[in-house]
Image 1 (cartoon, rainbow, N blue to C red):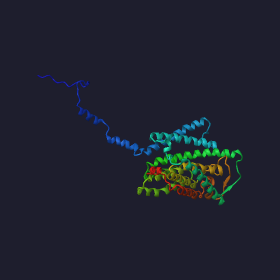
Image 2: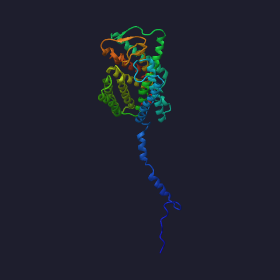
Image 3: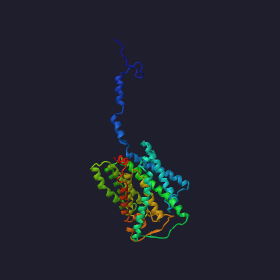
Image 4: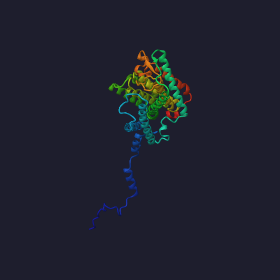
Length: 386
């Protein structure tokens, strides 16, 4: 009788040789499937790196958290007061806007690091040619455009000038303080909407995503019925449907830039509905000038013109002419003006931005940009929009 053959001890690998072919087959069996790897990568990574939706999903919450943290620090340092300021002063404006500017700069820098962008925050529509010249021409354009609006209102009898409110050194003092405040306003709002959001959405949006985002804004206003001048948002939303759909159906090269422009411009009007004293014209004007600022990026290659124009428009309206700005009257303004007559033409509590006359002025500003820069479209913008 032959001895019984016992199986080898399974607790030890000694003396057990596994064929190389079997090892390779086992490794292939338990290795992640290439299709699974590619699918997971496709969810997060596109042809241009981190997908735009994930980038925005990082940027917005991070900006909010940073703003809350910086705001608490400023509150402890007694640089700001708790709640919305009751008086519109240079100090309140400067430190209030500084919170937002610092938050978006830090958030954009982190997102740029994640996306491995060579120029950090400058990569977000701030690397175009001749930034200083474009910034200065933007400053001039904003002041001139607002002055034309004031002139038209005065000519029609819808605005009256009073006495000069400041004298001596206070003229220069408040001019500088309000200049700093509105430069921060321009940096924060343009940095958010025309720099980060416009750049990021351009590389990852189509008509259906744009329609969904614009539709969500309108649905929010309909359901909550909160805010002022809601029809200004609805008007900008409707105005963009047809041209953006045509660009999508004809598969125009770089149409993502204009889809993003529709979203960011409508969103710019949407966020202004929380301002006091707004009417539908002022909200529509905010959305429309937001579109003009997007066009300036297209033709100059960066947002520097928009930042300058935005800052000087607000400075001229609030400090120089002493008019209401979205319902806010500033302390320490140079001239004194008051609205008169029908609010549809005078702007009423909204100020000059709430007058129907603001719309042709904005269109003239758009025409001036196209005439000055339209034939000199930078190569960098063409690559960005493609």
